[in-house]
Image 1 (tube, helix red, strand yellow):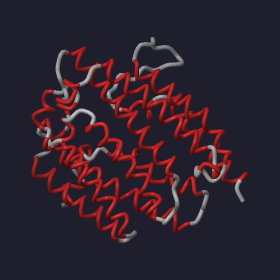
Image 2 (image 1 turned 180 degrees about the vertical axis):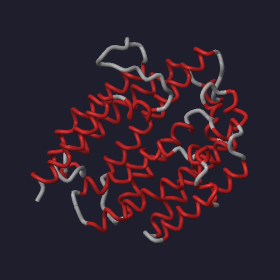
Image 3 (image 1 turned 120 degrees about the vertical axis):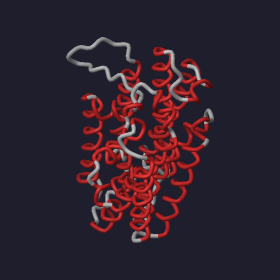
Length: 304
């Protein structure tokens, strides 16, 4: 087991960069505007639990997808697909991470155990079958983000607005659609079907999905930001963040199109992964930081 921990190829297969998705766990504590150590400790423990569980699933997925990954222009270089990490090593470490994740969740509360169990079932079904089924594949991705948001609230028994949960689900669905659209464009350009489900989609169809979901997510976020009168955020001052969300959606769509020329203001990130755009683009980072700062200021200077 000690060897597994220091196996850089195995650690790479756990995809620690993807752990940024689990930061959504902190959304409920942030919007509760309650800076109580116990709340944040519970949320942090839940975050760690999700990190280990998601890495466990990534390992299982890579083992199941070895044949397909070997045909992919990028995934063929992953440690498991390239043979640098064996199936036995991957599955052993996956089981170990799974045990740690659920051990942590039992020390938080049974609600988190239930959430992680549901997440595990959905992701296993996704790995085995649902990622090959159109529409079901993108809804599985969205469900994963929704469960992260819910877990942050349940870890510390915090209330969370239905409008906010709807916003999270729709924004996650938007990112999933964008991911599929990017994958489809890359497949078309290279003349290779890199994911089986892509044969059911077209760029035009995914663009229609994108327009519906982007609009719906912005409207639901705006209704949440309107405040307590609409069973939304703790204060209507959160409406100050609405323009930032709209700019963020526009910026992401601009970058994902990959049609503008490189210059000092734009860096085109030709990737099928949303996290690459979110982490690498300075504009997106600036929007996220601004949104967080505005939210913190509201919590400090507006709310009692």
